Image 1 (cartoon, rainbow, N blue to C red):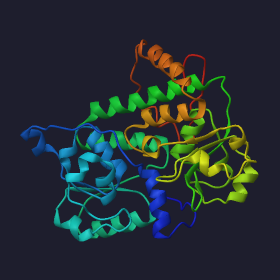
Image 2: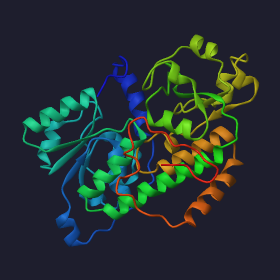
Image 3: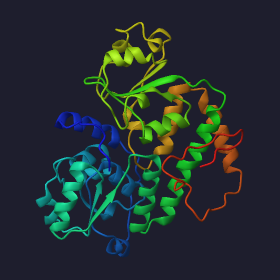
Image 4: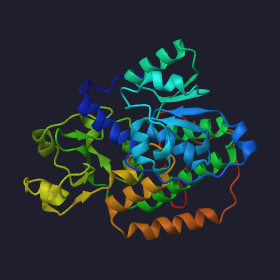
Length: 332
């Protein structure tokens, strides 16, 4: 995995991890039979997005331990043994639970943890979740691992269906020059080559953060002012109301036009199993509540059609694939 800048302090890395992980997950409790429990592998998840996928597929009983952050943002995971932080898990605690597999998201620090766990004799599955297609691939992989193929396929189809509907609903609407703010102090933004950047494009917003860097780059107020955003989407957790904060810079087109929107990060920022919810929330943030009617109409039209399975999963169309919007449909 290529490096995304030089963000290295623990506090800054935690902020970036919060965006990638999100702050909540919509999960379904699972009630497994004794036979199913015996068949499930013993898993430890060291990333909230993976934890959320496991629970969403109805296989939460496979988890015997999670990272600390998973226990905070995935309610069902709170009861499980804690393995430490995202960047500093206790490998001794992981080994002590004797899992069949450890689930890790690719990254510089995490790769080091994976190598150490493998040297200790544990099987480690590494996932990437920077891009939208990678998240869908993760759902598919975990569905196969946990014998939840149908559940995984259903979840993937729901996300793709919403992607098509949102893109259709965005046709003909304005495409505001947008900055999506991860954190205000220091200032971090959604940059290029991320699943959030892809979702902004799908819902019809031009992400100015692409011009800054890939990943989640650090910016400055001076750069932000010079970028002249028409829309500010502020996902800063636990901060003062966005409109009040950004009113300090009245020359910003977004402030002058009253287009500063507080976005609940828990609804859009986790690269997990509920990207359909995230896409809808993002579309509403960009275009207002009225777009919801168009989304519902597009969903209803899509569901009235007969869906035929493809031999090649639609998210495997290439790392730079983008949906092409047409009047009635959007190619996945």
